[in-house]
Amino acid sequence: MSQFITYREKDNEGVLQYYVLQREFPHYVGRISPYPIENHICQAALPGYNLWVAFDGVLRGNFMPSFPNELKNMQFVFENMATWFHSERVLADPKKYKKFKIESNATIPH
Image 1 (cartoon, rainbow, N blue to C red):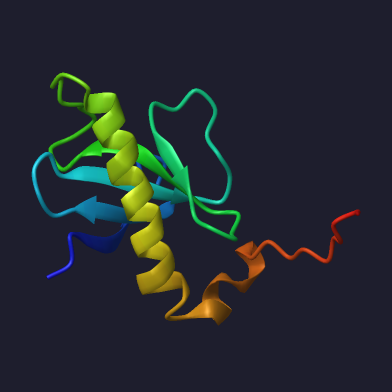
Image 2: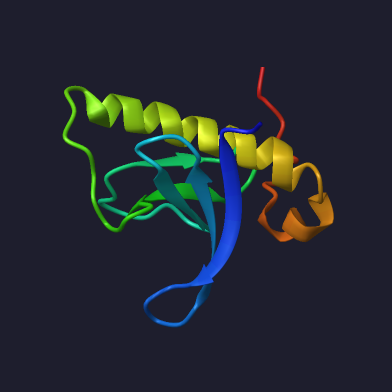
């Protein structure tokens, strides 16, 4: 069984959002964002895409556990969320995420 699931739900402003939920405690919730969110406690970029998974609380609300070194653990979890979302959702349906793909035709100077 996967350690994450995805779901869609309207946020407080009524906008439909896409979320990733950690199945195990502390049940972190990451919101998929098309841009990095300034001054956010934790977020991770999807490789090759203009998409980020940003901390949006835990299953029970906008809380954060206060375990020692939890910020390091959170970053690890959110990087795993981004990698999982990329492999399980984006690569499974690349047409759906084409507009977020980072296209690079740049050459590397010698």
